Image (cartoon, rainbow, N blue to C red; front, side, top):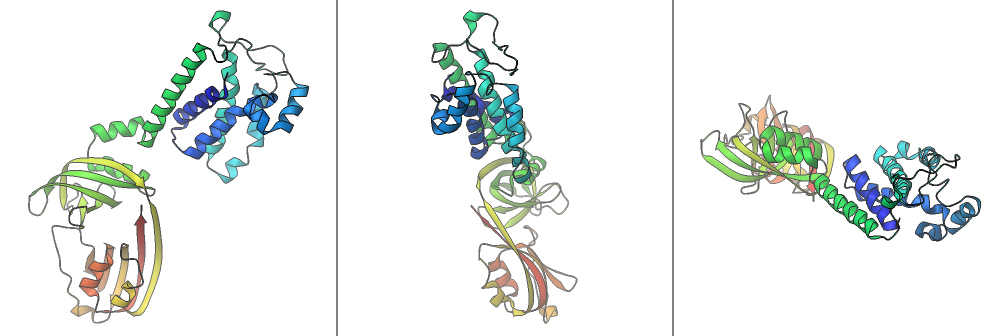
Length: 342
């Protein structure tokens, strides 16, 4: 069987069984699929690792020791350290690739010594006429099917898998969006198309939002139209009551956060030190706090509010903080500055 066929079968099997489209994981599967052919210096991997292939080729017949359950067990033990330093998917991909690499050869005319050192050969199927020949039309058909399954699995997995595609298509509600954000929000941009009502004005709403965080059942999301934050869901304090929430997973993002302890500094001076695209959460004790007046907008999410003699920040933008309390002096406080970059 051709090397490319082994690689395609290993990639498709790994993507489907592990539910992944990760290039490094699939790359390990491809590498594993080539390892059984280390018993031949004529193979691609044999030429690449010639000293090892030459050593094996001189001592063992083709498709014996490297095409067996014994070889898979040996590799599983040798590769075990991967489990301690990386996600178990990396180890599993290597093993799946190696196993499918030699097991696929059992469907060829010569079969494999799967139970080595027992010389009996595993040949599937029993009918010799139905077995594959290398570079035959039948093998190219197998290759094309493997490539099709590989592309389909990677495309489906990249968009969350069958279950999540079903959920996004048929359960277009805030709860589904919350679950998807909790799974993917730390590494991918999550946006929602929302249709519903403004709870305060009863005005019809249809807009696109970038999800920033979630509560147990609601979304905290930023409108891509006006830049304001809204709580979207069915909680009593939600600003938008959705009738439909369509989720879209976007490009990968990087999220950085920094905890800052503040003392004896002007708010405006502190804000100059942080990125202007940040989201700031925390609490501040201000000098002359009785003079602070926070404008309240019931139609949107309160990012800045006065609470218990302190100023509470909830995903507030630096520009919002500056406009509301920029001229005040911070006696003490603590804040988390979070930046989301795509």
